[in-house]
Image (cartoon, rainbow over all chains, first blue to last red; front, side, top):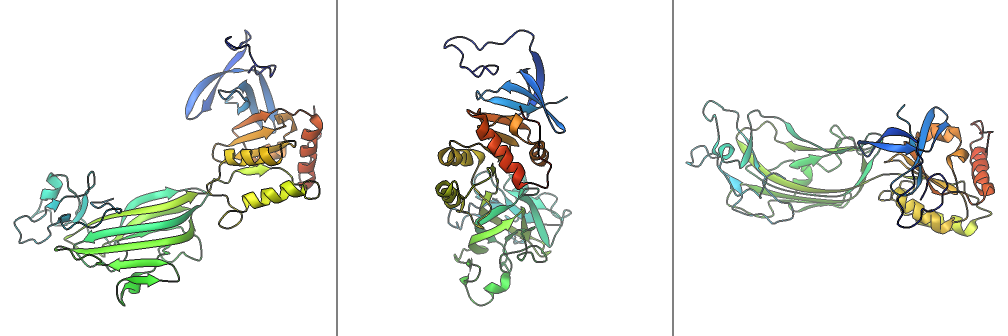
Length: 65
Length: 312
């Protein structure tokens, strides 16, 4: 799935990663991992970065910044 | 486990020698593999090292204690577990007057005593063995098996009791030159308490409302859902409310799952309340009105919290 459009990627093609996407390190499963950020969402006091997680779901993870 | 396996029967060949006149004093024999007996001997002048220490068959303590702690089985800050079954066996050099492993501190009231005990004390065994307490469903056999050396003990309990933490203690009562092997099995369920965030509309969704009540109703106290996890709740809600918007909060991973919702529809007050580490969109809203209805109902039922006014 492409996180930007919500449409499935073509079979056999690697997921498209638009150039210039900001990379952010998040703390996930006890490890720091790099993710390509699609958007930043602020909810109350919290800031979340949006990306497509390994499970294919649009995910909003709390921003480390 | 210390020297014994609780699922195996007593074995006369598993013991230590604590007769100081014996030539094999301080030796321990045949502990259950990868375990050691406990041996208490304070005199380090006469016995700087016991044979069982040298051959790795015992853990030696050089100080007597009333109650020796063997650490914490579990501890859940702000949460509780439901303990359902306890089995303890022991083989000891002295007659046991109290449960050899006596569990449990921080059990909830009214079970908490001076030590937070919930298992009956030794006087239950002062009549005759075996002892059965019909009130607590506790079964105790002292010396169910006569072995050439030492005394045996068996305790079995099943029921339901809540505890935020459980520790293991052995009551040695400040006696020196003793040994024991003991093993136990404790069954418990951790209360994960995932939350289904779906304002129910009894009049509109009578059937699914009842199904949800019936499904979630299987719990010890009717409120907690021990054994449930967020995936379970999500599966149930998908079945029952496939056309509505709802959220499920996994309070172990701190993930808020959104169905027919996006974070735009999640009110800030809910974010403040749950502080999710992540939000995951299981399904984007096919119809914005469904998501809006969820938000409106949620705000309406939490009217003391200012509703979120800005929507996409």
